[in-house]
Length: 517
Image 1 (cartoon, rainbow, N blue to C red):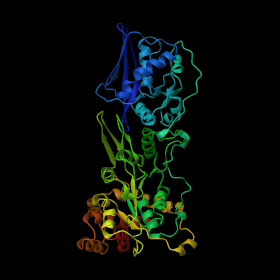
Image 2: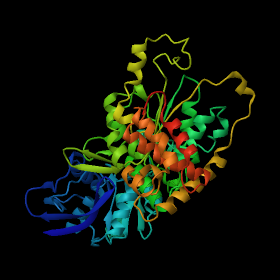
Image 3: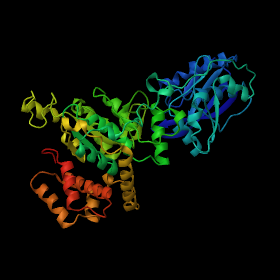
Image 4: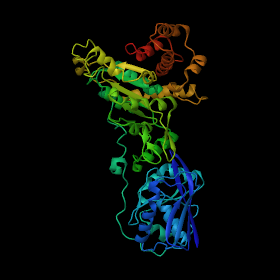
């Protein structure tokens, strides 16, 4: 009879817990039992482990093998436990003389014994180091990602036999082609990070659209949500794709959090290091609710909304999205997090993104201006934009019409570059951080309306127009709070100490698209 122990990590969202993997090998009829709340993928590890051990030239113990994953009440999911289960079993059977207790093992086993990469290595290794277990064994393809965690002592293995040889087992390490890392969808790692906009996307490419460009700058400075409405071909998609280019770099803590999310989602390329630029996600309007907010069997994985954390979530042709999908965004817009409940357990992912909605004014797209070319009825027009619910639009600070570009604008050079605008945005963000340095928020968009009215009220002159708009039904009270926040952002961009009458007027113009409040 023998008892082998080692460790693994169970992920719940971005939170990792150290799991002790105990293997009890005793006399009796041959059996292999796995206990401790494993999901289906983890339960199947018994067959993968058995085959991988045989592929190393070692006879699997013909005894009663019981593997316990402690603590038992914690749900465990995925194939990342395979390597730990194999090591614990062979240690319990004295096939690996070394006792690797305190070492965290992460990796999925192939039937030929090769160690396959797994998702979420970065947050798992981070959790191990934080729990006082810095020695970590990971798949060879995951070494670059695991090494991003300060304090981690990382060992990469490509085959189970490599690790067993290190632990004193008499095995022959086969020469097999190492497993390459892949990202979600089966793309090679070299193609990972496609959600990050390229450096070539510059606002100087956008012709005309001065008001929309200014709205984009205000959105970037204050972290405000943005709604662009206009006919096809006016540059709405171009503007949305260029928003990340004028946002400041992520801080080190933010970069670790964003990179961890992409690691769990399987879209991270470790060869590029930590993600330091704000991510950009632009799902197609046929995307399901699970694709947007996250899902999947077992413990749910992050969707586009979480992958856009601290970046931009752009919904082009927004009215074409399912109303159910759009309504799922109200929770992260309000709380900055997404909590997903499944039978095996729940997972919470951060989702503080900037939402950019883009829409045509009607189904045919030509209702802007005089609308002489529009073939839609008034009912069709109202119904089309009516697909965007009031509660959703009420959370969008900036709502701007993007008119058709005039032919004369084609001979005009583009406007300011993204680099020039980004410098103003960064200066405005610094003013905000200084003003809110003793508060739990750092951007104007995050400041509670009631607190802002009480501690940083508008002057009587600046407040007069806002009161008039509320009294005449042009703005809701929530809309007035959002105008107040945007006015502060406009003042920060201009370097003023507080918003004036003109700042409030501009904020109202950027908020009150048509008759919306």
